Structures are given as C-alpha cells and as structure tokens.
Image (cartoon, rainbow, N blue to C red):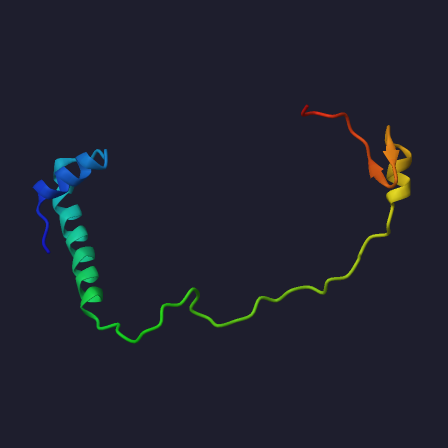
Length: 95
C-alpha cells in the first residue's frame, strides 16, 4: 500500500499532528514502507504456530522464602494507644 502526501496530511490531521508540507513526502515514504512490512508479515502462514507470552521459556528466579527480620510485635504494640489480644484497636469508621 502506497500513501501519498494527501493521505499523510489527512492522517496527521486525525492524529492532531502538525507536519510541514515539505515533510509530507518523506512521511509518506516511511509510512508506506511500514505498511508494506505489515503486509509481508500478514502474508506469512502461521497455522500451527502456538502463540507465546514470552520468547524465552525460562522460569522466574525467586529468592528463598525465609524470615529475615526479628519479631518485634511486643515492641510496636507497647507504644500503640490500644491493643487487645495482639491486635491493634482502632475507632469504628463505618456505622
């Protein structure tokens, strides 16, 4: 598909882009090349090709699930305004 300067001006207007008239032929050439590449890719037979989420079949490296900090619940609850049975008590918000 080949675009001309008039089509480029219309596309630029629809996209709310300001381009100079002297730049329109260069944009037309570049956009036409992109559309030709898309046509080539659409012409490739992809039947039987399984879509993939990622090009590399790799597992995520995860760190070990280990406790790294000491339990400081008593320390923090000692400075809380109200605590009961290991829970922080807060004012009721919704009635």
